Image (tube, rainbow, N blue to C red):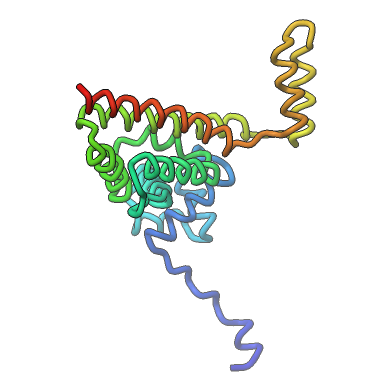
Length: 226
């Protein structure tokens, strides 16, 4: 085929699949937030007409549910953990890292009432690990709630602190000017400390996680001794 024929050939039609549609929606959310996900925005991301998406997803709600399921499927559910605390730790740390990549996900996950297969597996695995460790089903449900409240809450906090975020030094200086030492001595020292050593989100998350897992271990010990 000549170069002129190649130049005149029409572009190949984009081959859509449900997976491609959902991945494109995640791309929109990663860049602009979950609120920016619309059928038109996803279609623009893919370079197609919005109507063509309906061959693969029923509506926007189906897209949002599918996005949640893909994100949940990125969370590690270790099959080789030595005990329940190691399993819960690895699961929680993996979730925190996933939510750092997709900071829009925790609030969206909280708002969705329909669960896909990955999310159902996730729920079942967490409950299974806790029940197999010796927690009663009722206590396991409460443990699950405590852990995920912390994981999702930390993710929401990251979202609120990174939305429209200024460069770190500029943001720290703004915070410092807003909390004069004469009026807010402890907050002022905290901001100075943050400017000096920076903020380690993973270390902060691990600190709280250790406290929660230690408390749950005490609950399990009390249950076994009852």
